[in-house]
Image (cartoon, rainbow, N blue to C red; front, side, top):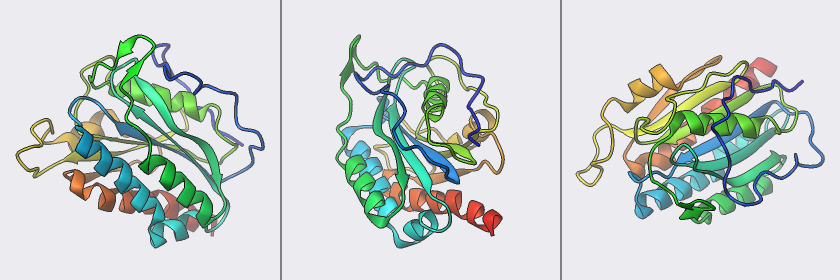
Length: 239
């Protein structure tokens, strides 16, 4: 039975027109509903955005990730981008993954998703609303297919500076991918110790963890490890 995300405040809204359509038809039981959340605030330039999205696509196509995703009961995936507290948009709506083709099509969609430049209220502010981003992920989980576990996978390169720092859920695991560490000079927006900040403010739920990418060139590697780790423990538990 699906575990509902709870504890959401009223502040999170998806502002891209049409993204809050009704729950997808044909929802079915699965072992994991996983939401990928990508930071597109001002600290992420266009080159870094492409490295992030194309790196995620490469991770989804990796043989070890495909093997983990396609073993046992199906998984369901969705993805969105986020910036300030009022700025989130769905990049890929819920899809139950039943074949390598499903994963490849999702990878293609993320690799080609255009970075949002505005919403009905005007240009995106470029600020970093971590708590609002989590709340938006919780809203998306509320209409996920029936799954035994729910996970939000939040990736970013900065601490919160817009709205609440976090949102707490019941029965939802929140993992993080921190783009930080020993960064080249052009990564002046990155925060040393971001992984620790995520551990203190973002991580929650059973088995929650944070991984660190050493710059956006390292994003594909970190995301591949992260996705495989998110799928594998459930397979061992099922066995």
